[in-house]
Image (cartoon, rainbow, N blue to C red; front, top):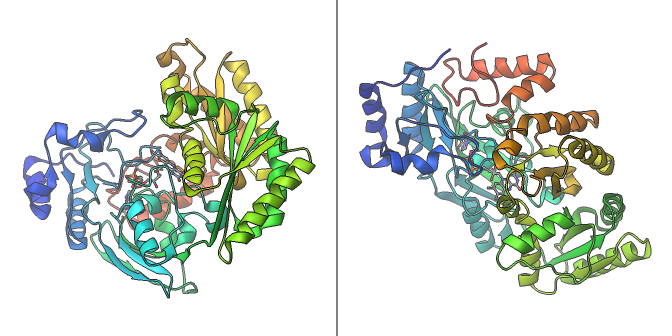
Length: 478
Ligand SMILES: Cc1cc2nc3c(=O)[nH]c(=O)nc-3n(C[C@H](O)[C@H](O)[C@H](O)COP(=O)(O)OP(=O)(O)OC[C@H]3O[C@@H](n4cnc5c(N)ncnc54)[C@H](O)[C@@H]3O)c2cc1C
């Protein structure tokens, strides 16, 4: 079904639902809602609506279904695949969740927090901490991304190794369906085998099936011990050996295992204020190891020392430092999280958020590097990421002195090369950022037709009028 561009009368009906002060029609004020952080996608909208209650969301979606008006849900607008950006000149209405930002309840005994979908992730982390608990989702964008966006992209982040991604961190959801009906699935149960799991359909759906308005999220004990180390290595193969040792030695205490290349360390020290190389020796590769224990602080300390001693003994660790204060731990993580922004001043950067089975990472990277360098001489490959999850941000910076526009113009070609190798290793072309607009056409090419057909049927069952975030994830129309 095609969507209609709302007439002035219809727009007035939408605006009346939230009130004029919560409807943004002024172009400069709309600007922050219309472009994503990388500037690849820009859209337009007749209005940004900011509902202040679940019933207002319900009224908006009901009217949208009745009139065939497209709705684009938006949280913090930090998504990397432009799922939150309206299409240009299509009449898409942006529905911002920013006013739905109340923490509804914290139950430290039951280890849950119930929150509106518009809560900022960092506020959830703080609320958990105030109750002596941990909400473990942690991303570079945590100061601005919102829980509904985290759920809708099934966000991963730095602690997936120990705690899983958003799907594993959520027990229940409240969702407004495209018809305006409200599904109250705010259950707090770890065990609930009662038919199809509707919650899991909405998580990772990127706003194409309904609007998430509330969630029950899992909390964990605050760690008693926390250790972060930075190790210099000679190769990705050595990093894999160290990861294997770390998994055996630490078990669930291994919270993060992040891989970084020398080039990434150079970019961050060059461009990110306050970041400095923590070592006075040079290494081809680095890993950041994060260990947290809930019983004693000493156990984390002992584990980290044992792991690094073993790595040195095995000849895979060339040099290592252990952070000796919270400030140092934060600064090591800051360097890792700055890898992506530090690429910007280096010119154009073609990104790939991919995953392969962990044991295939060295072979995948060697093959991808060779293919990329054969295609673009002098390309600067800055591949880093959550090695423990098999998730590599395989980013390519333009050759020094190259023309940025020409380089970025080769985005699709480089995607085809890198993703082809990912698929050869039975990997995924989107490990944590989703599909959105950026990877929509590729999704249709790489998933078997039966899977695309099942997705289309699910979409149609939930959203027969085709109003929810059209042309994201799947192409509109059947
Ligand atoms: C510096 C930086 C670091 C990042 N690091 C990571 C990382 O480590 N791991 C990771 O997974 N991601 C990461 N991201 C990507 C991004 O932060 C996540 O995808 C985040 O979960 C998106 O949340 P958001 O509120 O900004 O969502 P938005 O960008 O606003 O929206 C994302 C998608 O969700 C939909 N949506 C939003 N809210 C709702 C809702 N309430 N109901 C239904 N649909 C909704 C939108 O339509 C869109 O399709 C990073 C981004 C940045 C800028």
